[in-house]
Image (cartoon, rainbow over all chains, first blue to last red; front, side, top):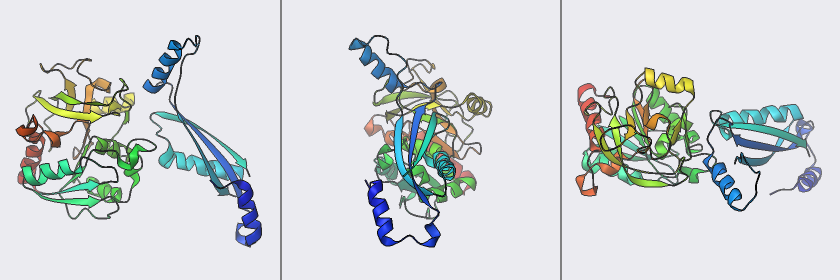
Length: 106
Length: 233
């Protein structure tokens, strides 16, 4: 995985063109979880295992996905909009999953 | 009849489907690689079972967006016969050709065994040679076959008679015990609105010769042959 410092150093070395002057790098995180009205057998199985290990009081275990990606965009809003497009096109099944997005400029 | 069987990286029932079409039915049968833009002029396109792209992201999600699917969508939109079996069903849903979603089996187990299906609709090219409420014995082999749909989708599927198969017991009764994966209303397969696209979790192609324990799945292929003889495509 490329680290932000490396990217910055490489860009400085290469000299940024006037075209990507306004482009910024964002670290994006997407958390995808099963919708609350969907049965999550994996979460249930983990919950039962926790109970067997005497972790009383733990309930409603849900298992989802956590994704990170780096994205070039003009602004944080533009990056968020692009991630939303990706979620709709591929990353999330809206019938069964909910998602949250966070973006941080590098 | 010319059949095309699409092969994705990770398909593992492709040869079962090729065998059923070629050797059992005697159709001209061609394998089509997932990067192909053409279906070689096939009348019937089969998306076979397996674990396309390792089931990464969601079952069928990446295959449903692979290059060949543009040709499959065009074929389906033109009324072409399209059959998705097991992972192929998951792919058809992910490609937006069928409604709903296929979730992890409610039992959390990979289920690999014979099941009974009750024929709920003979009004399709896939089921026209069957009898209404007839019981078929065919195998399943899946971990994510738990059919789910929104209330609205489910109501529409029922109203439009688009659920040709439900899991049942040997007596033909639709019971919770006969449901191998937790599917809503024991749904084992669904048809598109145009009735030319069928997705199903059970494997008719693996039960098309009595040598392998059941030839009931052959009824589906015979239905297709009958439809082709009648209408042609």
